[in-house]
Length: 120
Image (cartoon, rainbow, N blue to C red; front, side, top):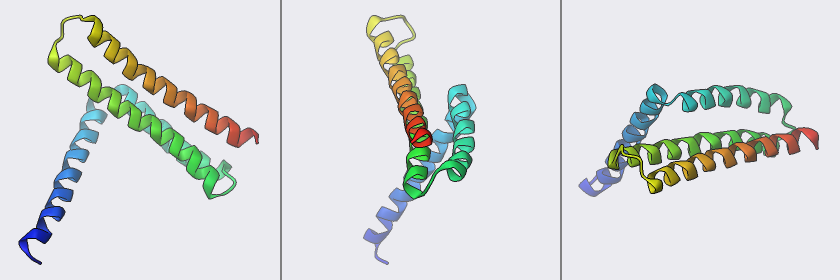
């Protein structure tokens, strides 16, 4: 392997390390993230039992996994806003509210997917 071949591998290792660090931080500091992981664990099992095939299972699991993804983005936005200033500002509040709304929409999406799959 040449030196150039190692760069992408090192980049992947670094990115993985940063991602694991972020997941650990979210687990340690974000109660909503922990709850959503618990729900994801139950959802994976339930989807495997209740889903009628790979597509249904993928939709059911993927919709709940999307909630976790959006929660991580919400937490990142909140952390960034807090880093900029702890002072109350209308735009800071709006940014946090919009991020929270994204989590809410992802929860509605997950609920809709599960309802459609289970009631179809």
